[in-house]
Image (cartoon, rainbow, N blue to C red; front, side, top):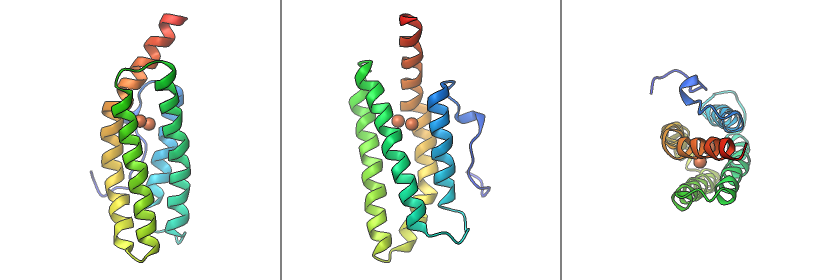
Length: 134
Ligand SMILES: [Fe+2]
Ligand SMILES: [Fe+2]
């Protein structure tokens, strides 16, 4: 990844309007963690965590409703990342500020991989289910 600020690009689009809109929001909230904008890091992380809770729950709900075969694996990855965000939040509050920066640097890599694999499979599955039931 370059030194340019991370931002949404069509390369991340999964051709599913709701997922793409949610992912654009994730990218902008996550990128904000690295912006030296004078805003409090914890406030920005809290906004990202709040978004991520609803983002992941929406995907988990779609997986339950449509009996998505790899749902367990996908949901476990969601839980792991949310726990990591919560853990880093507590440790930053305890003074480990560098961990917050590590999180801000690593999350884009994790997210791009997650979109390419798990969310991509889910989007294809949801589009198939919608076309069968249409
Ligand atoms: Fe997602
Ligand atoms: Fe996901």
